[in-house]
Amino acid sequence: MSSAAVSGPRQQVIKHQTEYTLLGTAHVSKQSADEVRALIQSGEFDAVAIELCPARFASMTDPDALAKLDLFQVIKQGKAGLVAANLALGSFQQRVAEESGIAPGAEMQAAIEEAQAKGLPLWLIDRDVGITLKRVYRNVPWWQRAGLLSGLIGSLFSREKVSADEIEKLKEGDVLESTFSEFAAESEKLYQPLIAERDHFMALRLAEENGTSQYKKVLVVVGAGHLKGLAENLNSHLPEKPQEQLAILNSQPAASRWPKMLPWVIAALVLLGFGLGFSRNTELGWQLITDWVLINGGLSALGVLIAGGHPLTVLTAFLAAPLTSLNPTVGAGMVAAAAELWLRKPTVADFSSLRQDTAQWTGWWKNRVSRTLLVFILATLGSAAGTYIGGFHIVGLLSGSAA
Image (cartoon, rainbow, N blue to C red; front, side, top):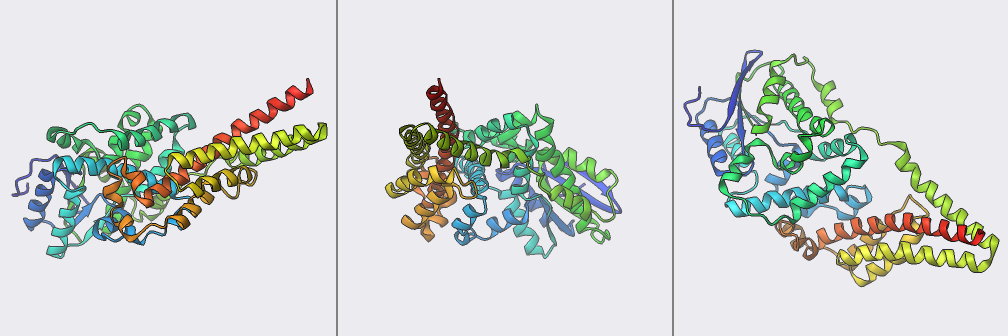
């Protein structure tokens, strides 16, 4: 047992002549940070592993990481929703931190600082949060996805105070798990990518980093919710070359084909509807086109308006949505976001204060970066709703004219 005073949950696993001390922590807790420092300063360990991925490590150690973000490329590459989700999760953690006076990830920061001070190897063993979110999203049935999104939105808009005792209870899991805990407890499809896969992934990463067992005593700092699963995976048979299994856990499940085909089918049906309308009479044809523009463009413009977009961005969304819905290779959200970026280019200060601003829900509309993300998301949702509503409206008019 360690001579350092440690009250947090922990387990010790001996694997291939290496003793792994698994320390369970709260991701927002001064006590956890102090425990991490005490253990590393004890001099008992020759390596430290932490529940961070390279991306989160970079954001924690490089304050200017967000300032280097190319927002247009993020949107163009389809990563706007992922960035927004990460900010929503971070806003919950930031709010808890502000109420407790402890910086987010204080125990991980402590591990980084102490390991570097002692010149110890520092291993980043968690899977990238973006891959985890994508695997969660793809793994659950489509009808449960709205619940996941509501969990993220709830974490953003909740104003409930969090006591010190409740913060200590976060030792049961990190902010990602806490957000979806209600669903994970009841859904095996959610539990697997969110918790079980990460337990396995972290065990494989330890095996990869310590392949020749050159390090004999390793401190592993993880959320306490991972202690049992990680210990079980370490105690089980681990492959000599874990890279193949790591590649599988890092892969993204293939998306279903029908969601990709559906926009093209709808566009073809709408164009067919226009053709049928004009074949019956010119007035009906123009009415179909006018209603399509008003419904599709109007709902997309409404989304931009709700997001607080520039008036010219609202107009851009109104004009673009009816056309982009007939050409699924270009989205109304992308066009609207590009207009917003051109009209209100984010400053360095916007990027620097992004995490602080999004900790409060009103800050999402104040900061130009997060507001642009909202413009993209709400313009896209408005256009999608307009496509279906407008499509059904066209069918109704055609049916009525045929009667």
